[in-house]
Image (cartoon, rainbow, N blue to C red; front, side, top):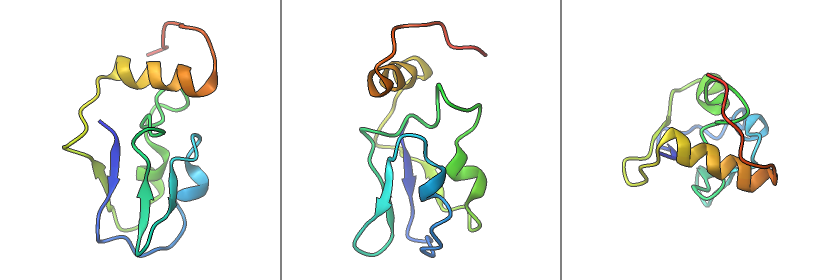
Length: 89
């Protein structure tokens, strides 16, 4: 799944610089996550960095975009231009 920022977002700007894929940007009213760029930090970190730093816990799994860990890792590989490797658990 990709991540989703809910309406509880307070526009504090803590999440945006934490995203290694630049998937977070300022939307019309709150920050938004581009699901085409969001890998839930798969390939970069063990946990989603934006979720870790959000002071109001407004970043959730997007129920409309279901992706497996392997799909997220493949997206990471495509975004970074690296070859297929076995992710370290």
